[in-house]
Image 1 (spheres, helix red, strand yellow):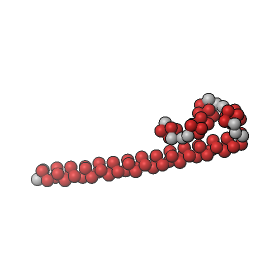
Image 2 (cartoon, helix red, strand yellow; image 1 turned 60 degrees about the vertical axis):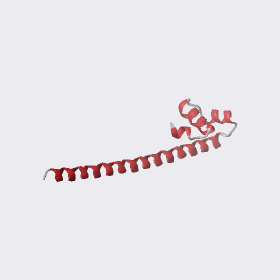
Image 3 (cartoon, helix red, strand yellow; image 1 turned 30 degrees about the vertical axis):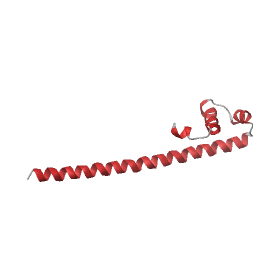
Image 4 (tube, rainbow, N blue to C red; image 1 turned 135 degrees about the horizontal axis):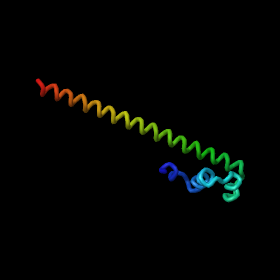
Length: 88
């Protein structure tokens, strides 16, 4: 949703009309007063823009997950050390 909202109003309309309402490029082109050929190019450009944002978001998620796992591992090691000190 946040990626969709980051698109311009025109881009949102194109994606919504094509994928959710099932409009053809020709129908959307008429409403936006643009050629079918240009609209098709634009739609593919928008999809690539969304794809790049999704990839970036996924990469950031992986980085965050790795950081959290590392913190958990360090915390576990610290706890083990403390337990070994108290068990002596």
